[in-house]
Image (tube, rainbow, N blue to C red; front, top):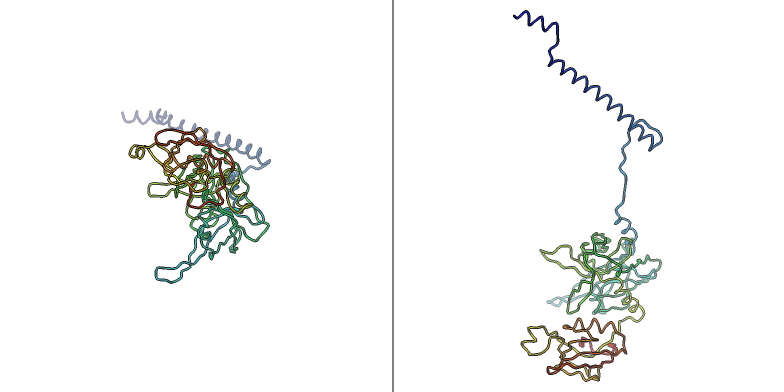
Length: 382
C-alpha cells in the first residue's frame, strides 16, 4: 500500500499542487503585464506633459488663497492709530496713558479714516497726541484731527506725508450674505499690526444700539478684536466695504463683529474733510421711548414722548408741546426715537416734514420745517 502511494506521487503531481503553481505563475505574469502597461502609460503621460522623460516626476500645483491677494492689495492702506495722554491718578500723581486702534488711508496726501471712539480721548483732551504708524514702517507720525462725528462713530485725521497708498472702496449696497470678508487691522495694538482675519458676510443692515445710538451695520464672522476698530472690512476684490467698529464679546459669543457700511461712511468722511463737522436737520425736542407696558401704565400712546421742546426751535414754531407723543413721521408709524431720527436724518435742512402726534388721546398732524443743528445745545437729541 505504501509503495503504491509512493509510485503514484512520483508519476503525477497532486491537483492541489497544480492549482497553487498555476495561481503563482498567473499572478507573476499578471503583475509583469500590469507593470509594463503602467510604465508605458506613465512614460506617455510624462512625455506628453514635459516633452521627454522616462522617469516619473511628481509635482504639487501651487495655488494661493484669494485672501493672500486681498491682503497684498489692501494691507498697505491700513495704519495703526495711537493716542497718548496724561491722566491724574486718585493719589494726584500724573500717569501716562495710551489707547490704540486702526485706520484706513483715504488719500495719498495723508487723510486717514478711523472711528470716533478710537480718538475720543484726544477729542476731549486738547493735550492728547494722536500718532499714526504706517504698514511698512515702525515710525510714529503725529496726526491732527480734521473732524469727527459721534453719531456715526466716524472721524478723519491727517498726517503730514504724501505718496501714501489710499484704499480702494467698493459699494456695500452690492454685498450679499455669504460673500468672503477679510478684516485687516491691529488687534490689541501695534504689536499685532496688519493682522488679517477671514470670514464671511454674516448679515446686512443689522441694527445695533450702543450708548443710546442705533447703527445700521454689516455683520461678519471675521475676527474683530479691540484695536481692530477703524480698520477695514474688505471684499474679494480687495476693496474696503466697511469700517470695523464693534464686536459682541462674552463666553458664549464667538464670531460676531460689525462694520459701518462704506456707502454710509463715505458721504460722512467727505463732509468731515470739507466742513470738519456734520450738520444735520433737527426738530428741537428731546424724547423718551414709550413701549406698550409704559403706555398702559401711563395711559398714553406708544411712541416718542416729548420731554422737552427747545426754545426758538422748529418744534416750538410748529406748536409741539411737552407731553405730546409722536406716533408717526411722513406717513410711517414709529415707536422709538431711533426710527424718528432715521427718517428725519434722511431729509435736508429746510425740508418740511409731517409728524403725527397723539395729544390728549387724539391724533393730529403737525408740519415742521427742519433747521440746522449746528447752533443747538448738545443736550438736545433730535
